[in-house]
Image (cartoon, one colour):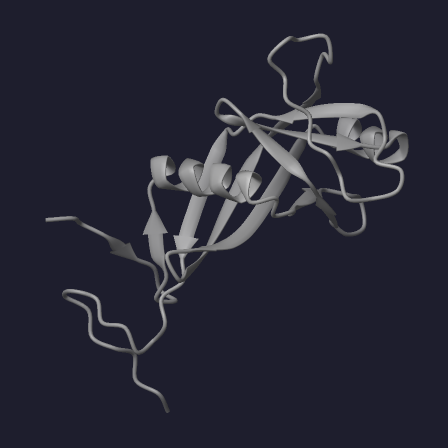
Length: 149
């Protein structure tokens, strides 16, 4: 029997293995994610293409954005997709550092922008969480459907 945890909103909380699988699936499908950088007045969130390298993410960004990422150190990255007809969302939080482009096995994403920049950044997946969104009409074992008032 598979045990699943349902959060207070009715989403299925995914374990880290499934979250990593979906993160890799999103990269393979060419889905862009969103990079969140803490800023003094308000967080900055921008779309970026990514690849999965081991347990980590690799992105390619321009000089100005790199300076912000380098200053922040800790960033967040979120990607959403659909697998087997079910929407999902994965959030990675971790340290962002410049990647050595000389590494023979370092894949680099191909951004869908005119000037993608030259800085290669690795985001260490220190914390990875995932959710699978389940329509209210679907039933979960041991859980009653939420009331609609």
